[in-house]
Length: 386
Image 1 (cartoon, helix red, strand yellow):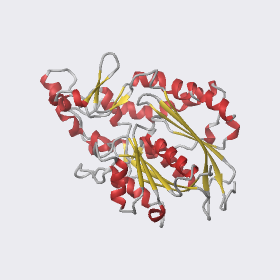
Image 2 (spheres, one colour):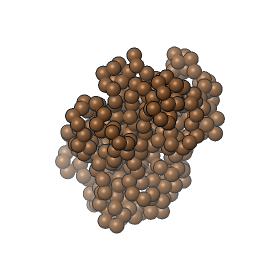
Image 3 (cartoon, one colour):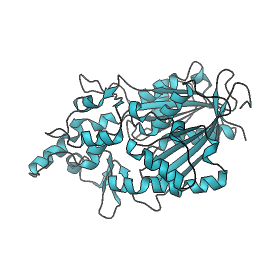
Image 4 (cartoon, rainbow, N blue to C red):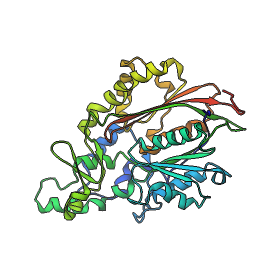
């Protein structure tokens, strides 16, 4: 088995940062009234700015998901496209149902023929891509793998996407002609971005690299119903009714294709399942403790979960002080499967890393409750240096 090193990291955030008081004017109002939930949600999530692939003047898209991802891949540096023999792309919402997101990115890049893989899901799609790439290099199947995580959710969060639902509400003479909270909630939580990493079996000859020591992923879909979903309606029993089975007129009238989240289910299970249920097994198998780590990169959707995450980890026996946490939720936003890449890119280029330091990364997913932990070791130039 080969050691695997991340030798380059890049991130792309579209257009100028969008402040909290600009969001609704850029996304557009959903329904006849401004959102009543926006200020409350923003106060709770702690996000001050984010990026949208939307022209603020016209409301039209400035990028596709594939274009944004391709920008991140190109930003890895000269020679990457020529050396890349495998491209693995993860995202929640590709630009189309098919072809897959990976081949669309490959088409945008116009790079030489190679193996291309797409991973699906929500926040874990990016880490699934990372793990596939890591295993490919470790097993000697490929020499140079590029993995990506990207999200372009603003396109489906624009107010006009909910106009039919708002109109249907008015026709029904409802007292609140606004989008349902489960959908409105996410309009103030999610944003756009893309990240990419290059993985090889040797560290970079100049500068730092990150050795991937291990990546552990686990799903708890056998225990819990879907929490975050799109292209479906949730039945009373918690099962999902596919968009394929929904009457055509309901697709627009109920915004079936919109991203939705069961906030109550999220609050009750995200920490207890993705941390407290999974982490004890990792602690035992990997023999790790909080003292092992110089940096902790946690992906969480809202500042609301920051202390809850710390407390959940402490309850199972691992404590990492907040001063060792490296997050950028407040100024980069929640970019889903791209978030961990964007955090890694910022820390990697910050000048704060020293060879030998260890990094623990955590990515949960509320789709149907999955979790990922990854350990990285900072390495200096030259094979085997750490």
